[in-house]
Amino acid sequence: MNALTGLTLKAALEGLRSRRFSAEEITRAHLDAIESARALNAFVLETPDKALDMARASDARIAAGDAGALEGAPIGVKDLFCTRGVRSTAASRVLGNFIPPYESTVTANLWRDGAVMLGKLNMDEFAMGSSNETSAFGPVINPWRSAGSNQQLTPGGSSGGSAAAVAADLVLGATATDTGGSIRQPASLTGTVGIKPTYGRCSRWGVVAFASSLDQAGPIARTVEDAAILLRSMSGHDEKDSTSLPNEVPDFQSFVGRSPKGLRIGVPKEYRVDGMPPEIESLWAQGVAWLKDAGCEVVEVSLPHTRYALPAYYIIAPAEASSNLARYDGMRYGLRVDAPTLNEVYESTRAAGFGDEVKRRILIGTYVLSAGYYDAYYLKAQKVRRRIADDFDQAFGSVDALLTPTAPSAAFGLGENSSDPVAMYLNDIFTVTVNLAGLPALSLPGGVDAKGLPLGLQLIGRALDEGTLFTLAGALEQAADFKARPARWW
Amino acid sequence: MTIDAATVRKVAKLAHIRESDDRLAPLAAELSSIMQWIEQLNEVDTAGVDPMASAVAVSLPLREDVVTAGGDSGPVLANAPGARGGFFVVPKVVE
Image (tube, rainbow over all chains, first blue to last red; front, side, top):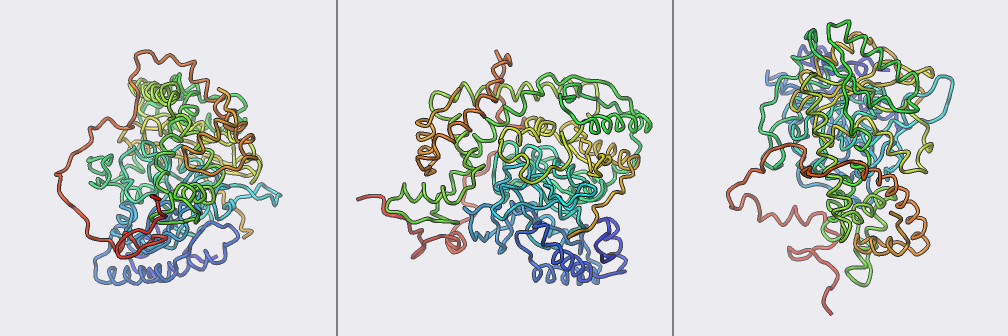
């Protein structure tokens, strides 16, 4: 391995600023790592020429004393973000060879600050999945393996390419998105840090839409501080997204390393679910002990409607998706399958372009919105959503943040859950609640299970209070001292 | 709620997705099992609860009703499966 690819983003930025190495050198090191890691299938498109052009421009700005906050740092971009002149597919056949003539606001913010794009990262099709197996490009393989096993494991989903690329040192950090857990669950399954910020922190403009009232961008990185650095660049008001928040973006990095002494932490009793592996239960207890040691007060709280979050999500998200994905009709961009009549073109194009899980969700969404069912399903789910948000409001009346596990299991084998949609949906049992409520939540690695696979802890905060999450995550990161790395097999 | 093959056919038509006849029964079984799992929402008392459509309580901003972008048919048409003379080319819709 090259010494320039194992660095944290923070260390890399320091090395670049002090000119110990150039942006071109660190970019080449990452391009080499990506080339030798194709077995992971983390990238759907490598952009080496663009990366080197951007790196040389960064070197010129560094030489001119004009470096941005991320100047020269090579990162990866989930293929859900539209990138000007670079194929963007959402890992779907229906987008075909779509080349956006515009740049998403989040990636534009990153390039404004000097980041370098290495390529586009694999994901579940339209971000619908928890194992990356719905990608039209085939699944990403988790760099982690169980001790003594060659079985291929999932990196989680939908941001599986982002998480795997960060875990395997192919990128210094990556953009990701989270509609029901798609940043945090893969972060948990790959020993990385991921944060879904408050809904509205990051602009959704130029991000391929799945469920607009739930979708939110965020970073996956190797450390809490790296995630804070990336999130600051990605965030900010954007008049092109009417749900983008006008609030000022804090210096998230400045919250890492502060003492969490005196903060009150809630442990929601409803997250103690049947069949939870004992290792996850004990990691959760260990997290509580770490926070107590750091001077936090930990109390049990109740979020009584927790178990209804997933079924409510599986009405709301497919309903919004069925509406958002109506645009893929073969007329203006992407795939078109020719047929004698207009309706047959629509139907054939969408049949050929969408994968099974995407079709399943469009059908559910169309069904729950159809005449006669709207009140019974969609309106009911929106009312349950309010109940879930009210639960959090109640809890945050007495605590500053919540601590839970991120996912109900460690990384599982490819193919293990793919035959039963509901079993796959249960991966998001601990993560989906905050999407419905619009709250920020962060996952960080807390330890490994008996097979040596990483397990994540999740912190949930008040709306717009990512700062407290970064303080608590910094304290947990220090206490956990998570040093495990995937043994290189690729 | 059990979804039968005829309902799947109707919903697929509404969603503009072609499904072959031999896929209707398996899809009906899959969708039924998902909808049966969703039925547990009926246990929640939602009397008098306002439906929540947005994750943040902000009123949508309005802007001046003026043209902010446009006259850019080149990039708009660049990805079209069919385009001619500044227009999208689509299958004939009137006989």
